[in-house]
Length: 131
Image 1 (cartoon, helix red, strand yellow):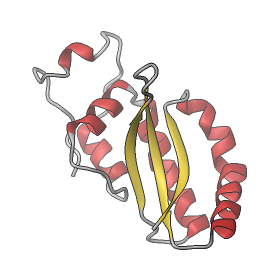
Image 2 (tube, rainbow, N blue to C red; image 1 turned 120 degrees about the vertical axis):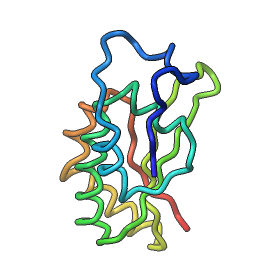
Image 3 (cartoon, rainbow, N blue to C red; image 1 turned 60 degrees about the vertical axis):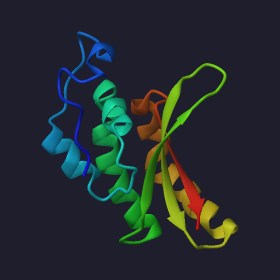
């Protein structure tokens, strides 16, 4: 279960003064369908980008509608080695053929993500991961 780093933690100094905090209980509820490493970086990332919590809550519903109920989605933070910028990836895990998985991802994009991605401000990407 994800727990946001408490005030006074090593990440406190990175929080801007104007950040809108999201309740850790709400965040945990929204993220419960996702799989992710038990690391404080996910909590720190979302604390700095609270606009993503609602998108993740909406996104899992669309993923399950298109890819099927119970589809595993893994959250990972990717760091760009050139500029150290971070982006959260939501990787829809699938054993489908590449062509069919990409067809479903296109459907996901058309039905929801192309519009919703504007709210992500470049901080979140949904993609498929093959298992």
